[in-house]
Image (tube, rainbow, N blue to C red):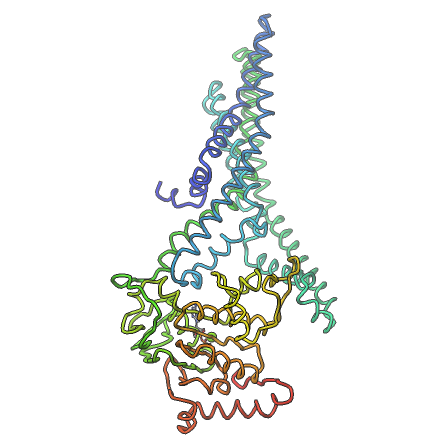
Length: 601
Ligand SMILES: Nc1ncnc2c1ncn2[C@@H]1O[C@H](COP(=O)(O)OP(=O)(O)O)[C@@H](O)[C@H]1O
Ligand SMILES: [Mg+2]
């Protein structure tokens, strides 16, 4: 029983009433009535034949027969409509559960956890028709499958009136087809590695051909024919795999046929001899012969894969619901101390150790760094040095393993989370581009137009577009921006937050899409605009951050050099080497073209 409760199918049926109790009740009721009706119909027919034989009035049997027949016909489309509605409600319920599971945890660990990725994909895409039919169709398939099964069982139950062994034998034979043909559902073949791989390749080639972004390179490099050939080859491979899988099943199909033919032969022979010896009346023979045929409904063909397809996302969503909360949790220390205009004295990172969940190499192990309030710090270091991770920790999207980040002497974990987050603003490398107006992109939480315009000016995006322009194509009057323009909008968003009271600004390579000179110039403007707050500027370019008050060189999770540009140049260490290397490229090439050669790539 416990094992059953853990099965995805069980969870599917459990979730139906949670999605909509009334529809689920109607769905089950219609299902049971529809399942019982074929047996009832067989009985009314026997009733009619009996009346004819005995010369009784045919009115009652005819009316009963007609009524059950009409009910059978009417209930089917009605049940289908209920199934569609219930399927839609189930989809909506699953979507709601998934969005809250994703959004509610205060951290982001649950969204970056590789162990949850598979479930997340299943849960996210179940209704897009990529992995199977949408839920509203699946619930209908499941309903038809269950109706058949119930009608088969009902037929078998009434057939007990003839003899005990006939329903057992027939039921067993028809049910065994499930077992004999259990590998036969085409759907299961889609889940083999070979099929998935062929499918992925076919999808990829298809998208290369039909999506607008690759269209430029496809033409430029003359790859049109290649893309089409590739798609055809992969699709052919898919068909071949399906064909092979079908051929493999000829034997179990043959065995099933033999088993079913033999048992049916036996039962009908018994019926025939009972009838000819007078043991069975004509009316009884009519009923039992129909029921014997009716038992075959337990071989409900399309039921398994529909249930597989419908239950998988339900199970995935429920698993995610349980797993995401702890994975994205943060650990509050003590009271939620309010933070306002923080930091006032300093931001202190001491003996910080942090490891990403499910990895075993710490990103930092004993990192120390103090940032005086109101100063600017540039953090430079190569790709993978842990710069972005530090920004995430400062936003408290993760908590450290040990050690602490303190704001004005208070552990970040003791601060009220939303109060702290309102003090921090950040431009991440993968900042969000809202399909919203320029105004809302700069101030998603609202701000005066004066603040918004001033922020845009500070970010070097004064004349980008009208504030009401939607920054996405496909909307009326909408426009798309270049990568560099988007970065300026994201910067304006951070600068606007500063105007609205944020005390700490984190800029994680916010200008990576600008050329070196553009980046250096905009960094200087930002430092100017954020003079009164604490600014942390992250860059992998050593040659663009010279005007920050202090520069920290991060390498292998440690600050290996710290000081002003002049101090670090005098030290003649890592910073000096990298600065000279990058600056020489900068003067050699960027002067004329603004081209950058990223020596760290
Ligand atoms: N969510 C994550 N889970 C596991 N490892 C991660 C995750 N994010 C980043 N890393 C790893 O942590 C290291 C530091 O990453 P990051 O802080 O992004 O570096 P940087 O910003 O300096 O380029 C890299 O080796 C990266 O692969
Ligand atoms: Mg980074």
